[in-house]
Image 1 (cartoon, rainbow, N blue to C red):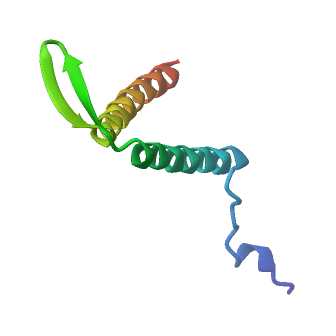
Image 2 (tube, rainbow, N blue to C red; image 1 turned 45 degrees about the vertical axis):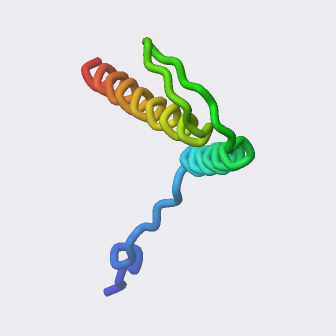
Length: 86
């Protein structure tokens, strides 16, 4: 009897290139965001819906990035749910 070695070895799946490029793009965006925040560490005045405050640019950048991430996550989940229904 001849043994089939292919059944005993687990198949290795190679990650998709699109996912690799997405992670590289995300890493580049984070590096640029940190670099921009450090380079612009001055105080600014925030005026938003009647709220006025003096804060550092890095705080504005971090809050804006976090808000954008939350909005992108929510919209991404909604579009995935719509695709699954179809």
